[in-house]
Structure formats: C-alpha cells, structure tokens
Image (cartoon, rainbow, N blue to C red; front, side):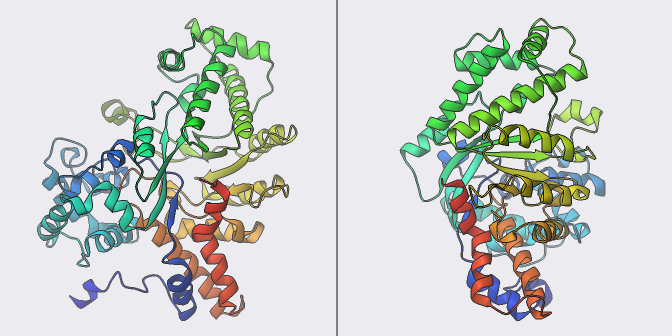
Length: 468
C-alpha cells in the first residue's frame, strides 16, 4: 500500500539531484501560459461547477475513449448513454491496463494535483475515488476558475472558428479574474474547399461578417473582417490543423474561377483544391503578419479513419492517427513565399509524425532571421507525441539542430480542465533530460545558467513571445 501512495511523489521522473534541483528551484513554481487548448470559454466565463468527475475528466476525452475501446469496453460506457458513474467505473477498470501509455501517468498526476488522491486507480479503488473526487468537483472550490487557479494558470488561449461571436471572451474581459483568457482564430473550414458542407459554411461566414460571399474577393473580405473582429477582442494567434502545408503556384484569375465553380456546386478537382487552399493560406498569413499575430500550424494528422464510427459519432471522437504526408518541400516554399515579401509573422510548427522531427527542427532555422528571438518555432510534441518519448525526441531534435533555449515550451491542446498537469509532466521530463546530462558530464554543473534556461522554457519565453 505504501508504494501506491508514493507513486506520484515529489521527485517523480527526476532521477538525480541535478534534475531535482532544476525542477524544484527553477521550474515547478513558474506560472502556466497555456497558449493552445480547446477549453470551453463559456464554462470559464460562467465559472461552471461540474456534477461529478466524469463530466470534467472523461466526457470529451478521446485519449481515454481509445484506451477503453481497445480494452473491449462497450461504447455505451464510452460515449453512449451509460451513467456518469458507470463510465467512470469502466475507465477505472481500464487504467491498470494503460501502464506505459501516458494516460497512466496523467491519470495519477491529475488525481494527486487536483484532489490530493494518491491511491492508484483501479477496479478496487474506483467507487471510493469516484465519491471522493465527485464530492470535491461538485463544490464552488472546484469551479472552472478555481481549477485554473489551483495550477497557477496565468493565461489560457482557447480556439474558435471565424464565425464565433466571442461573447464569452467579451463577458470575461469585462469582469476579469486572476487567469486571463484569450482565443486563437481557426479558419480551417474556410480553407478546405473539398469538405462536405463547404458552401453552407461559407454562407454562415458571410452572414456573420455581413458580406455576401459570391466571389473569392468577397471571401477574403469576409475573413479579413473576422480577423479584425478577433483582433479587437484581444486575439493574437491563429491556428491551423492541416495534414500538410499547401503550396501550389496559382493566379488570381484561377482562384477566382475555382471558387466560382464551388459556389455553383460544380466538382472541384484535387489540383484546383490545392491551388485554392494555397491562395487562401497565403492571404491569411499575410494578414496575420500585418497584425503582428503568431500563426500556428498543426501538421501530420490522418483524421477520421473509421468511416463507420465517424458517421455515428462525428469528428474528434478518437478515430485519428499519425499520417505520413511529405512535408519539407511545400512547407519550405510556403514560408519562403511569405519571407520573400517580408510578410512572415512569428510561426509555430507542430509535427505529428516523429519521422519528420529533424525536418521541422532544421526548417525553422531557415527562417529565423534575427528579427525576433525564436521567431519560427518547432512546437512541442502534440497529440500522439505529447508523452515522455515523444517530448524527449522533440527536445533532442530541437537541441541538436536549433536552440532549445529559445523554445516556448508546453501546451495542453486539451478540452479538459484537469489536463494542466501535462505542463508539470513536460517540465519534469525537461529537467530530468538536462540533469542526466549534467551528471554524465555532458553539461557543466552551472545550475544558475541551466536553471535560467529551464525557467525560460517553462514560462519566460512564452511570456515574451506571445506578449498577451
């Protein structure tokens, strides 16, 4: 039993005295800037209190859902009409089988940090832990705002579609609390012209922007109006979730004709789609540069692989994987097209395929022009790679081929208000990586300088880079 209680201890993942000193003295108490997540802004603005732990911890978490399905848990107790308690009990049954998956570490870190529960979660402990955690989560002390305060979150940046009214951001800005909330502009639905429902979406965008979108110029006008609206409401970032960067040569007349075809419900060829997507992406990026935004590109996901389950449950329900798209040439051409006109804004590139880590780590160096510290960033390991091995490989690639000292660090990329110990997880991995190299004599035992680097990666670099 004692081993269970000490699994998540003060020196979890820290393997020597140097790692311990770096984490406890330089990283642990740094505030959190979570510059990319999918939290519900309404929940923050209204300071929502959840009824039980399932609502905040399991609902919406496709990481857990995939694990439960793999174990053979019926969908009724994953996303179906099973009771919240039964869903929790089925998750608890799954947890012991997740050993060596980051879910095992995250689960116990989250129970410890939010609820002071250090007992291992399994079928035997499930009832007790459900009651303990639910009693706490269903109290004002565990409202969404207080959950953010518990982890010292200085800022959270949600992600919204161009059609969003930003009403909850506006309400919170009028009555702020300790944690600031911003947003990121996510215009993928306006870019991906081959998607089902594209014309319906463009109609909605036009209504929100107050623009009748009949031509490509109208589309650019509508998007610009929404970007300016987001900017007026404190937005400083964009975000794109794309399989790869699009870059094909195009002319204005070609793109105008392609958009006209789409609006007339004619079939668009794959080549035409790529030309259109290239044009709109360049237009958007030039607009971000004009406003001094940071642009983010999440590249490499192969989404909605299971057509049957996608039809039943929709997107973002756990049917995605790593893709193997070619990345280097188009990404280089895209960044070069912007840089050649001096319209390349600060950029973060997130990579989902570990085979492309070195591609991304070297690509950013091509466009770090000395104008801004760490202007083009190789983003933290994300989605399938935000685990110990994935983070370590990203840190190593960036260190070997760039300057890890300029790195803006970790983010949650999560829909859960209990996901913030992922920052702690990253910080412990970072400190252990450096501490191990100090012990082996590969780095000097200059704790003040290396400690400063750790503090910068944990917090200071993001604070300076984003300028929220």
